[in-house]
Length: 427
Image (cartoon, rainbow, N blue to C red):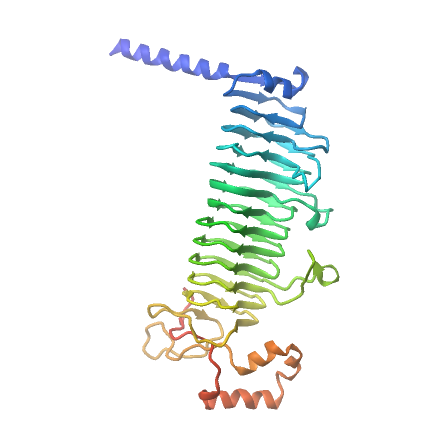
């Protein structure tokens, strides 16, 4: 037993010595960083001491590039700061700055080229670059705890995105902070990608999702963007536990989204965007802010969310049917529901509806469910949506008489949203 203990201790010491020997310390006066990278064997670890190293680095072999506090790689305003063309590369603890600013050439702080599978980008700061991280045609990427800062003085449409992803599979982006870029995330044509616990602020979109399926968007935070989460042309998404606070236009957009779950999210204080001259990105803006906007999206489950203090709580239109909408709390929105269609929509499921702060019904049975349905819209609402200038008549006797007639003679009431089991208490 004693000999075995000695042998185990000796083996552990040997392994520690070998691991330490594999890590090569590099200082700014040791010569060009690219030359050092070219000379080391695949699988090597380079530890950069504090100081500034010339950027434009290309890593074409498995390698770990780790920075001590104060280690900076500066591209001097040309090309990428670091371009990775090989699998199994790790970048950690670095300050990456001053890429070129050519969006067409996709200049980035970190550019992961085709085949850079299993790239790990951990605890770096990226600043003054066109794109923060650009990855395409690869799988197994992990970007964790990075701080990505764009250029606030540049118009947002002339900036790159914090995370730009194309044709990515089975990857994880967690704990990153992105601000003052164009979009926090732009993802296109990808599968099984997860965004978890990231923070986005002062952007166009927090997360901009296009043609990407089986993704997870969990626990992220969006603030002061021109739209929080724009989810488009994507299926089988899990969107859970995110927040949108003080965003514009909408907190969540579901545009051609199918068979997805949007649950346990919180949206507060969404207002219309009134950008320079009322236009931004070539789009006329200034319409109402929507906590959630559902456009031509079917088969989704929208439950247990809070949509609060926004100009419109939920706007649903353009063939958005067969969605389960229940367990949500609609709190003090100027307009709780805008439903632009003519078919009946039942917004309760298995005897459980939603909580409405303006519900005036009662609960004589004490079961927590209102005894009368909640029906948020009537013919007057439709008239005002079609002819917005008619809002000046809102308090006129004619409008009051029309609404009274609808209450007395329900046959005149148009089909629309009906919550047959409104909740008396906020979940």
